[in-house]
Amino acid sequence: MEFNEHKPIYLQISDTICDKILSGEWGAEERVPSVREMGGMLGVNPNTILRTYDHLTNEEIIYNKRGVGFFVNESAKEKILKIQREGFLRDELPLIIKKMSLLGINPKDVFDCNK
Image (cartoon, rainbow, N blue to C red; front, side):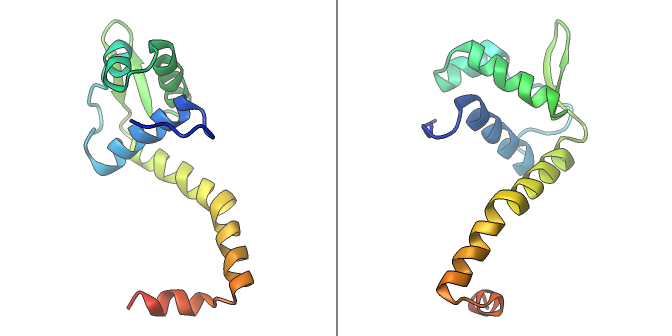
């Protein structure tokens, strides 16, 4: 995995895990690789993975069964979609709208070019 220097690594790993859940690669109630396994797979310090898992646990995307490991929460997909939609509407869409305005692009033009 290649990391972007403009975003914390633990958040980039979190995004990758969320992508795996959304794509169905990791299903509800499925065990997530251990902190050490994930660290080894990605070539990062286990403390970074632990920070990622803490973040995802706080977002209720994964949960920890003490002594067993981390698992995908039953409602993980819905939570991820909600978080990503809110982020898109708050952060990305305003930039797109501004750029469209500067370029004189009408929203109708966008939908027409996809036909």
